[in-house]
Image 1 (cartoon, rainbow, N blue to C red):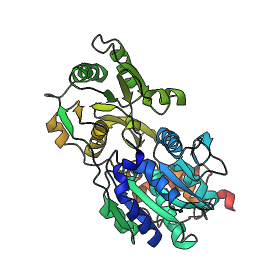
Image 2: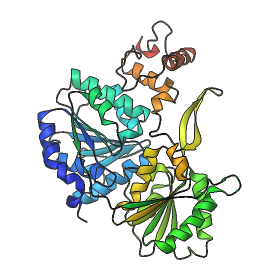
Image 3: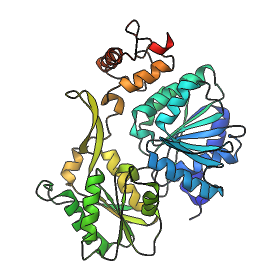
Image 4: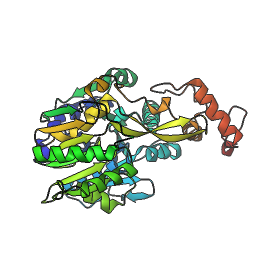
Length: 415
């Protein structure tokens, strides 16, 4: 399929006219519509990036890098020229870059040092439904900058599963554009009874279901696991399976070297099984996948009050995340998604993930805001206000560490 045939192009004229008339836009489009790769190219073709660039915020480093690579190929340029990316400890950009994919912390740090965002014409917040803490803060700061010193700045927020009503009120005045997409149907299956992953490990259950689905469904398989350890065990199970001996099997997670990540998403003559964390849940396109096996678990960052730090815990994913994962199977043909839990349990799951601002320690973000000259963090225009006690705890901790002065909590280095 040509990129210009993707469903998002039904919105192209509306996107262009809306952004020329106003400064804020919400784009709601389903998984596989092409919004992450094509909206930046629309901005480039229609002159929005003349004399500047679009910065596309991605929740994950892997997505930022692979999306930049895909868009560079479609534009017909070397990665790092017109299209590039910037993530922690790695950068492929140049003076010619007009489309720059970044992780959320990169932009927030840039705002701290240059509140005018010189050279940036458009900010695109992709996969905003994930409600990462730095994404929330960056959007709020972008609004402040747009309302004060950069009225010419354009802001676009995109997602497949997003509560647009709340966000539209927050961004008002703001237009909302919706693409229905053209997803192929995905048949959802569940286990007959709740599995006991203590007695029957999740990787063993997943490998058995892969054997069954592979015999019934053509195409490649995508298996979701919560972390690198579970992925490694699943790959071992798949590679040791006599029924799956004709498949190539690849791990995929954010800590792998780039060449191994590229290997997982490449096309092959043989069928393959990709075993991934939730990095493959959004943004990332893996061609050829027609079946998904979803363990229903993910590692979630939460504040541990006993140790006083943020930590990663394995938890059940929400209904919205499960829908995102299932959508990976219906990109190019009708697909199937098997969920390793029961249909009854599914009805009891949370509809959305709790935003990070409600479950993480805020000390790092408070320090970043203070460094940006924002003294009243409680009065900051949060999309969703954090618990006042969490803010107080963060400021007290920073003062105890000597990062902030106690009197008014002014940054020590600012005098």
